[in-house]
Image 1 (cartoon, rainbow, N blue to C red):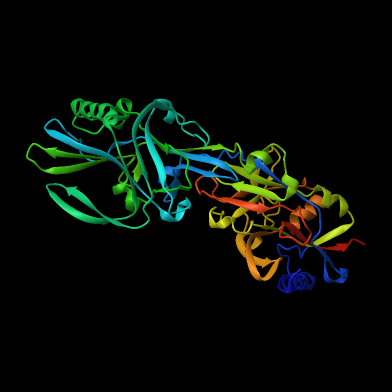
Image 2: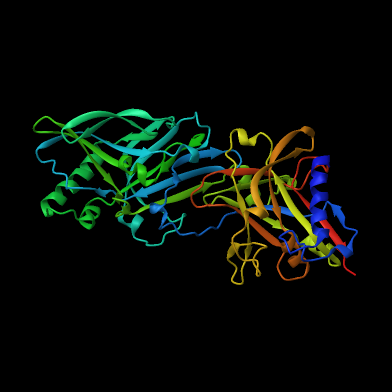
Length: 461
């Protein structure tokens, strides 16, 4: 064990032995008169990769100002993930009357948030647009795995390297034309099949009334689904910030009978509120990947684990063997350390933070925190879970990324029979923040980089 880590642990134990006020590291469990304290990092535990069963609702995602992933990305560790986005598009201002105009083109514009793009940022992404059916938006409280049903009609497709810088675009405002510098966008030209389905809905809306009728418009045109056509090495994210909503949606470019070029935008938003439905569906296929093997109880000698957001996979750590061997011990310090496999962060976007969860009385996973009396509550950043640099055991001059968790109270509760020995780990914001972390399990050579539990205990008199 390297000197830096040893000094950190010694300092932590000194804080425990000082026994001031209770802290999340377990200073309320024992006092300084119970020294000496033994420390070890060879305690046996099992790290298990499981399919995620997250059922978080997505009804409020349309009003959040976050990036929503879109498209298909492939990973040798976790398989493929296709992020599909369903959107009802409705009129945003006065009705569009095209009876005396000629439609030049129709384009779907998706503003991008570059910080939420995952994978190789220089790789191409293929996005396609298909028609949605009414059933895609009937449920008021869908979850991220609820099917978005399409009608099988391709409305458009584009392959490009997702833009990461602003560019100049032509904007037709009223009777004027200007060049504006606009943020990163992904543009998908929409084809004749889209025009044949969409333009009659516009005409029907104009013929029915002089006022915008969203229900009538959606009844005539249910919406669109944006998805990955081919799985590649990157996946962009749609920017839902209200500051960029004027560049989101379907743009109809047309020429009036007076010869003016104009544009009209259709979106799921009007002003700052959502008037149409917007929701994602994440489709995972672990076939042929490391996660696929782990799902089938092939733990690969417990040397690797895969944690993936958007309903991909979660981790379960089984501490029962430790608890059985510590029945006559009080836990002073218990820190779980799970490192990322070196080098995988070069082409895999690791999750910035993961959080622990436990099962409640009815079997649902809920956040666990040592700061709450019953353990149920938001996991505090002081308890760990964010990526941090730790020394590489194979090279003292190098560091690797790892997640560290203070689980002192949890482990003591397991030993005391107050809680079962399973602790689950899921990504923070797992319903809309993409990414995956490839982790070292506790198996393998004793001197190798691996998950471990740094444990300090005291004999119970």
